[in-house]
Amino acid sequence: MTTELFPMEALYKEVPLEAYARLAVKKGVALEAGQMLVLRAPLEAAPFVREIVRIAYEAGAAYVHVEWSDGETGKMRYKVASEAALRTFPKWIADGYEAMAREGAAFLTVYAPDPDLLVDVPPERVALANKTVGEATKPYRALLMSDHARWSLLSAPTAAWAKKVFPDLPPAEAVRTLWRHILAASRVTGGDPLENWEKHAGALGRRVRYLNEKRYRALHFRGPGTDLVVGLPEGHVWQGGGSRDRRGIFFLPNIPTEEVYTLPHRERVDGVVAATKPLNYNGVLIDGIRLEFRDGAVVSASAKTNEAALRHLLEMDEGARRLGEVALVPDDSPISRSGVLFYNTLYDENAACHLALGKAYPTTLEGGAALDEAALLRRGANVSLVHEDFMIGSGALDVDGVTEAGDREPLLVSGRWAFDV
Image (cartoon, rainbow, N blue to C red; front, side, top):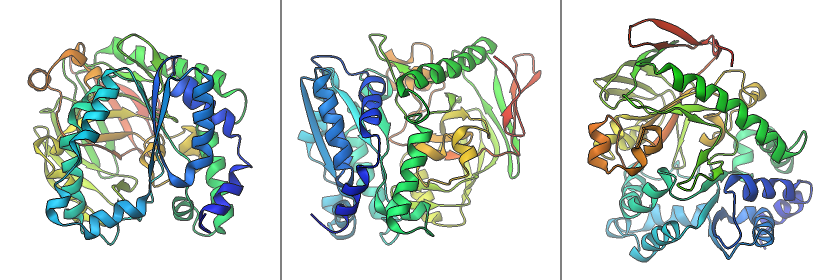
């Protein structure tokens, strides 16, 4: 065991791992007896992974497949591999993912990227490798994004991530502090986690019902550096608090979650938008993003740091320059109130309103889960290999819903909900 892993193992003894793991298994993927579980996690999260595996088997899992990741070995590929190697992804891996999804497996990912891991890697090499993986695993990802299979994403600290978030703390204390914030944001502390999530999902569900009844034609975002109109397609569906698979089983794709979201019309987004938090894109922090949209597409893009990485994202394919998600999150959400910048989209997107470049979730369009790409495009849904969220919310953001008659109704004023449910 390396010296880096040993203190992490010791720190895990201070954490309510069983409660967190039970939340992941029981609510995150809603694992059923006889079901397979595919679990992906970094090596540093081994104690948490073991607890998840134990609880999954106690719940009757038929088989738990653990797929370990290590950022440094991944980085070696980006830095050293030939261009031909970066264009290669094993077919058996892609086919295996798709087969497991079709056979009813659940997918659980412990997401804990190092925000600075790839800072010294040419962004074009990372973009090439990611495009290769995206194309190879497209059928599998389509099954997850249409909720054919249940999936969930949650986090556990790594030493590098904790140091980035809390650079002034000693390494062990940084990890402890990040754990406290993760558990609080995930509603693991402060009562029974399963009951906490029942209440929270219900509250978000009431917001969703209100917005679905309104059937707004567009949303208008106004704030510092932002004046953006996001058109919504006919038949758009708001979601939030959780999803349901093809059999109607409720699960939590993201732990934590504070958002209600839908899809924009891919050709009806106009104006300018300024990001309010940095985007951690594949191990590179892109800060100060500014985008200008015309007829749905990005026509001008800039960033204060790592602009090249932003441009490679936008050039991934035609759909990468268009929006696939618009999400409302109040500025007084628990994660926002913590005042912590996580450098992790799973957390930072739940502290602020956000948009996503790339693919739309088919489930945010009536009947969308059953449509092929051509039909989705005809109805205004975006299609792409990527789906990258970036944050635009703050205490200075106002959001109006625009009705079919052109009337405006406030949804967020100074970053806070302007309607009761």
